[in-house]
Image (cartoon, rainbow, N blue to C red):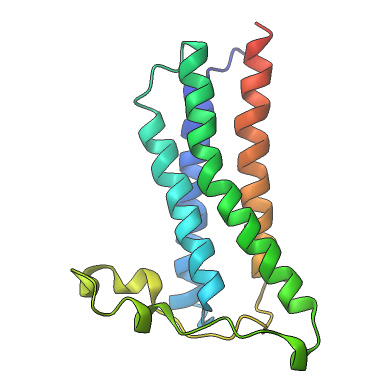
Length: 164
């Protein structure tokens, strides 16, 4: 079966929808309280989803369009990968040595325009050092797997299609 780069971007977009939904499910159904770093990872997942969706509009049949799309999708994925890695490192420290992760995003952004419309995205005030698990895996590890997978998919397919 012959794959196109547009299908790759669509797969990343759909994976982003699933992971964003999982993030909201963990918070609003399972009752897990996201910390400021968790919120940053959520925003990075949503950014990957949005950028990959927008990249579907690019001319990905051409090599330049594929490279540009891969670079665009990689930016929020790398940001999320860094944030998840930092939180995993922070959680590995003893409780007394963990730095504060700062004020909740709802406090930081409360005066922004239309805050009440998108508050549900940044709502949460958990502690970054507390490990929350889903299916026995810490949440930042799930994020790390998502961002790593996105990078492998986007760049792996780019190099695979380059050989054609």
